[in-house]
Amino acid sequence: MIQKVLDALVTGLAQGAMIALVALGYTMVFGVLKMINFAHSEVFMMAAYVGLFVIAAVGGQDNPIVAGVSGTIISMAFAAALGIAIERVAYRPLRARGKKSSLARLTPLVTALGMSVLLQNLAQLLFTARFRPYPRLFEQTRPVIFVVAVVVMIGLELLIKRTWFGKAMRALSANEEAARLMGVKTSRVIATTFAVGSSLAAVGAVLYCLDQSQAYPTMGTVIGTRAFVAAVLGGIGSIPGAMLGGLLLGVLGELVKLTDYSGGVDVLVFLVLIGVLLVRPAGLLGSSRAEKV
Image (cartoon, rainbow, N blue to C red; front, side, top):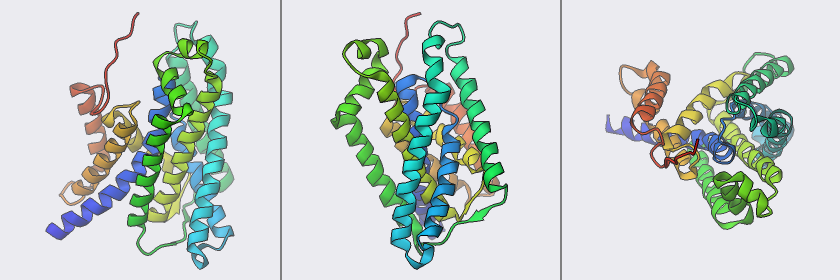
């Protein structure tokens, strides 16, 4: 039994690391724009397909390291471009007019849901609804997943804390108008935030598929829901919170599979969400901030 628990912890940390990579995209966009980009889960899904095609094109199992690195980098570039396109087409036109509207918070949410449905149906049209197998590049994928995820997360934290872009992003999060008056090019910072968040989702997508061995058009719904809950659990808007929330959800999910309720992992996810919202709405590492009305 102890060995099973240890195995579950290792698997849970790997699963949680992948969830955290996707959760970072949610939390970055919310930190800047105070909105939930529900289309983010479909960026994850589209990046998984791009990674699959690139890995197959450069040799797959015959050249695993080159295939894995190439697939990840190109899917990151694709996801970043897709994230920028979504922001430019779907969200940017709403920002200026949204401030003058009584539905300022609702309109972007509806747009995000519409974009999510559009991308999911586009994927089914392009790739069909069937499951596509991913090549098995490594015998032991979970240590690779965890190490890559930790390195990426540390790099993101350094980007946010130590660079001009990170400073501009934090200024924009605190007060968009003041940031603009101080010379911050807000549209460029927002577009870059979407690009970085989307590219992290691409890393998570390739790692997830290398572990789970398949890609399909609705895969973003499952992982996106868990990533959103992870972001809320850790404190949406908090980078360390998204990491912590993802790891906790991954470990809890694997531990539940050892019980008689192994089919209730998704139920647990929503129970966690409800519990956090009731007990600590700001999340484990989040902070409440009063708004003037």
